[in-house]
Image (cartoon, rainbow, N blue to C red):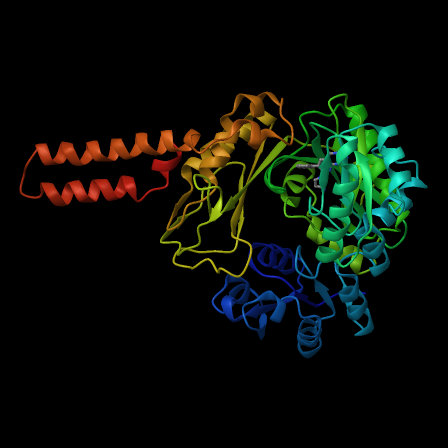
Length: 497
Ligand code: MV4
C-alpha cells in the first residue's frame, strides 16, 4: 500500500517534524487542532486541518473518536500519533484498525505487552536479556517478597507494573521499612494507574540511562540504530540527550544493540521503538522497558545515522521491507540535543509561559532546530511547555558540544525564561565534558546561583552602556543610551554569554 494522505494526531514541533517528511515523500498531510492551536504552525503547514475541540487534551488530542472521524472525513489512509497523547494507547491502535485505517506505529499487541513492565519483563526473559535482580512477577505475599529483597540486597526499588518514566517508584533503604513502603506503593499504584501490581528490583545507585533505537518491518527484519544517552534528567524529565553514548565501547554497543533487537523480536515489533537500559558503574547493563513510539530525542539518532526515522516509520507502515541491513548502518560523528523549555531554571524549573516577544533561531553548520513556534506566538498553558529542541552535530563529541554552546549563545528568546542557560551550564560542566556523569548530574551539580552569576554580570554590563552614554551628553544621548541598552537587554545573548 502507498499512502497519499496521512493525518498527524499531534501538535507542536513533532506534528511539524512529521509533516515535513510526509511532504518530502509526496504525501498530503492533515493536521488536527484544538481551540488553543488555531493559529499554530501545524495548521498552517498542513494541506488540510480539522478542528477537534477545546484546548484541554482530554477533550481534543486524546479523544479517539474525534481523531478517527477526522481521518475518515478527509480521506487519510493512515495516522501518525507522534509522541505522548495517544501514541502508546493500544485501544487507539485497535480503533484505528477497526476503522480500516493504518496506524504508523507498532501493533496494539506490542503496545499492550510492553506497556506493562511485568509482561515486558516476562517476554524479554525468554530472549536472554539481562535484567536487574528482583522479581519479575507482581508481589502478593509480603513475606516471600521480603525474602527476595534480602537476597538481592538493600536498597531496593519498588516499581509499579503499570508505571513508567519514574512514576510509582519507591526506594527502600532497609528491611525494617519494607512492609510499610510496599503497602504504600500498592495503594499508590492502585490510585494512580488503576492497577495495584508492584514488583521489586535491586536499586542501581548511580546508573546511566542508555536507550537503543530499533526499527522493525512487517517482514520480520529488525535492526538497531545505536544508542542515545539521556542521563541528564531532572525529575524524570530529560534535558540533554546525545548519540552515541560517551561510555560505550564498540563491543558493548553491539551487545546492547543485539539485546535491544531481541526485545523487539519478543513482541514482533514493527516501526520505530526504543529499548531502555540502565548501566551501572561496572558497565553492566539491564533492560528496563520498551517505548513503543517515536521519541522526543529521535533527531540525535537521525544525525549520526543519516536515517530519517519518520520516513522509515511511514515506509514500514506501508508494508515495505527495510531498505537497509544492520551492516549498512554506521555511526557518523556525534549529536547533542538540548530541550528548550519555557521554564525558569532559577525558580525550580517552574513553567514560565508567555508570549515570544522576540524569537530568533540559531543557524549555521551542524545546527538543527525542531520547534513549533514563531516570534509573536503565545505558548499555550494546556500542553507541555517545550518550545524547541536544539540539536547539534559535530565530527566528534567535543565539536557537538562547542557547536551547542555557540548555538545557545545565538538563540534569542525574549518573553519567557527558558532552559537555554541551563543547557549551557551542562555543556560547560567538567563532569559532562569529560563524560564522567550519571543520572544524578543535576542533583549533584546544579544550583540556580550557577546561572544568576552570569546573568547579573551581563546586566551590570548593560548598565555600564547606559552610564557611558549618559556621561557623553549630546543632543540625542538619552535615546541612544536606551536603544543601546534595549539592544543588549532585549537579547538572550546577554543571558547566555
Ligand atoms: C531504576 C533505577 C535504579 N535501579 N531501577 C527511572 C525511570 C524509569 N524508566 C526507571 N528509572 C530508574 N529505574 C533500578 N533497579 C533508577 C531509575 C532512575 C532513572 C533512570 C534513568 C534516568 C534517570 C533516572 C532518575 C532517577 C531514577
